[in-house]
Length: 328
Image 1: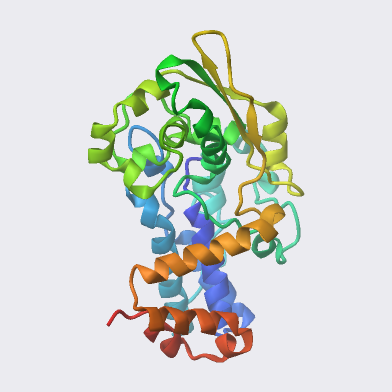
Image 2: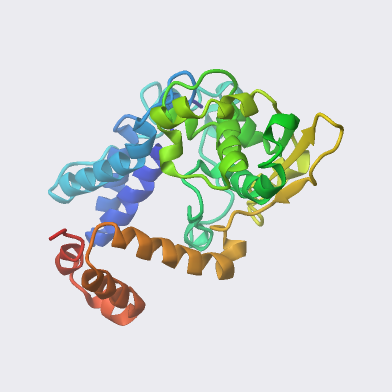
């Protein structure tokens, strides 16, 4: 549709915050209607040639907007009953069917949201933790495959003839990019860039996207130019399957002498539900390491001990919890 998915972040956040406010059903509906008519972001800032840093703060901005809309609704602001359905002026006619040719040709009664399942806890149960790499999620498994291949290619970089990236349709549509990349935000949404760095170095870190790093490592673009991106239909099917939601990628490197590496495929990223047992310890280690960049050891330990005590954590007032994250 061209709308950014942070619209859904705003919508969901509005409902959740309204519940936190203990608003009655009528007021919750009023707040959600405000979120629907509030104006929605375009995806322009997530795609070349306009990819930019806004994509890094857009979800937080949407959530903060949700809090604002709930607050004014709690103070008595009226709702908009026809936010979705008003002819000509409602969301369905203005932003939903007009931007979707298939919907635009359907009768009015069919131009409506459709849902895969009843509302419940699916999202929380299937939450994806971004643990190992600061990379767009469609590329997480590609980065992992590249790290696995690094020892096998690090001494043969100049002999590489071709790198075949096998992926799913969403990755091709959203992050497969050729040619010049304008800025760090453009690079961290480029599948080929996110594969090239760990192939070369064995890891991928946030600083690898910066302009000065890119300028000092032109071999990244040389590797990108040798990459071929192909879709695996099964990967695409499993990505959209709600019982799987895999994010599969595979990489194989071919050399000028005719030899090649094995084809390394990774179906689920470490932050996926299906890798929880493996992922949670890594997530906790990342949390500890992040705390250590900001706080002294005693404060880090205080925060960690609080998180280890579920009962104490849930009983801690919000202001006291937030005070723990104030730097000295």
